[in-house]
Length: 80
Image 1: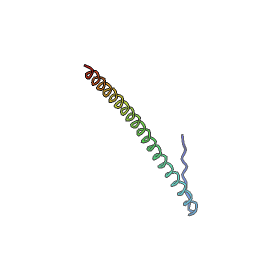
Image 2 (image 1 turned 180 degrees about the horizontal axis):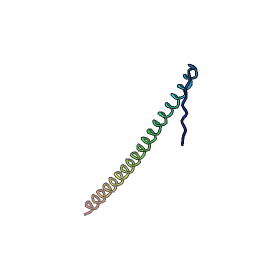
Image 3 (image 1 turned 30 degrees about the vertical axis):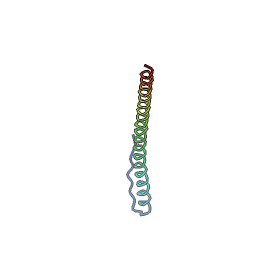
Image 4 (image 1 turned 120 degrees about the vertical axis):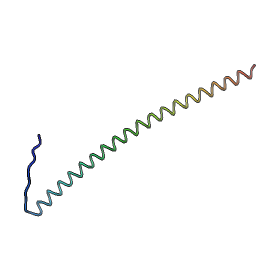
């Protein structure tokens, strides 16, 4: 368990130093949270992109099969 220490100082430079350290740690935590959020968004975007590419591939294969079947029917009907 983390222990918290209470700090008290009347020296202005010491107070400013501690405030600066606290602000830097606070900002670092905010940036870490933003990075985590962006990583999740990137992962979601990659998953959507993968699904889209799979769907496009399936549509292409289906379209090619339909065109090939139509061509086969066309050539069969012309020979009769």
